[in-house]
Length: 378
Image (cartoon, rainbow, N blue to C red):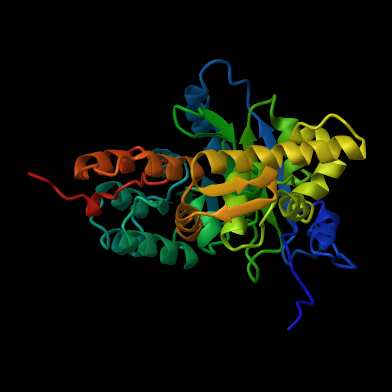
């Protein structure tokens, strides 16, 4: 059956590019005026970061109670933090500034349903926190209590915006930079995550309006004012994973030579955006020949990397491309190229210790462990 209608996020401003990519004849844009509950957005610039981003983020917490009192209108509030520790620390802080008296019988009974002392303390005051580090039982307890209206303020990580439908009258996004590890440092949150969090503001059937507040520094304020309206053009991310993507097409025999690889590349969203915004992708020429040369360069670089790592066989000046067994493994199991290269380079007589060490160094195999999942090895 032919696909007739495709729905995409309303936060995508350049929907005409998507229409061109999928060869659609028409594209309709339903903006925020079609939202069931109208949303008002405020971007608050609070000073300058300086040299200490951590200290700036910590000080943002002191501003949250004032924003809750100003915009919540005595209705449920959802406050997004960027780390598990931040959600718990802010929830504890809000118990004294935004919490109830602590004598409510329903809240006291609710608090007895968890064994976590910090969560108990918060629930007694109508405050809670939610993150992936909580056991499923505690997460479900918080979600149900918030849905029933027992919790005034819920501090959560962004995973709540993606996976659980818990709308609130007020959404506050505490800070716009996230720590991505020592290798990457602090980075701005992407527009998709930001708009997902903002989308939790306004409860259909309960509210006639919703409010979202973005807390950032004064320098970043104009950028987030633009981003909050969904006006940031979406660019392609294909170049980041071009090696893996080309390998998948080669393993499925979609691409059998360089010419087919170039033709395949010209059918992507990446190619549409390269023609419209070449400088974003490192192409400073505008002529057709310069664009062809750029595509050939990007394509050959990825194919050569695969060939030199013995993932594919590239021969006859690019007229012949064949997938090796490692190409099929890499594609089938979604193994990143750098990881696949390390596996191929591993000596055939490697023992369990060498294999374990290799696996421990691979990106993508590091997962946080919850307290209940930790096992003591004595």
